[in-house]
Image 1 (tube, rainbow, N blue to C red):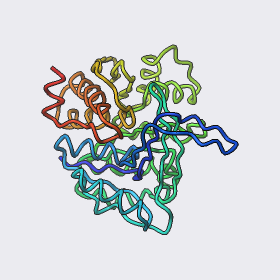
Image 2 (image 1 turned 180 degrees about the vertical axis):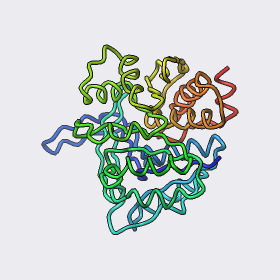
Image 3 (image 1 turned 45 degrees about the horizontal axis):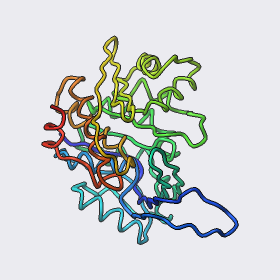
Length: 305
């Protein structure tokens, strides 16, 4: 098994404390600030590697300090970065204003938006699964993704998609991808928004997942502290997360993706894979940043019991 993750690669600047901006040149004091590996694709790739899955990332960074640091942190996490290449754009950056129960995210896409479908197909040689993240930050790839997914399926490669939030809230282009993707991994809010964008009227998260699953993929929904649920055909599976002291929820959904995929790709039944996702996502919140608390496979297995 070899997984290729395709998408964004950047750093997160996570600010904690008095983070609600007040203009008028007011100076506010923070309780903490960390510059860590960010990006949905980067965090998912690091999570898979931490779980023992051979993982590579295809992404674009800038030829700058942030780009070099992004690649360094990914490599230190065990991710193959040979397809993380520098282009003539600044490296993307997310500034996260982190509160106890919510956060705001300010993102510069920069170099990460230059990734193309042909870049992904070229990097996918030898991969058994391709996971795509941050659909709406990658306009060149998003426009070509139905073709990319169909081509990968014709090669016998399974695929998954975590669209993340659409900053424009239009949700364009996802519907065309669903017949060609094996697993869709939205969070609860995204699942409802996607179903509504297709002209549906979901009554709740499970109904939204059922509506999306009718279009082809297994739908695995990340539901925060409630864990996760999955719909595959007529089967509905729920799995709880863990109750623990949360330090930072940044990237928990991406760590859920890693836990689910590590289990599902090993051949585990859907209920086991969803439980792995929920546990991996929960454990990732034990430390600042998206990767500081990511668990090993042994830690997930022990906690999942």
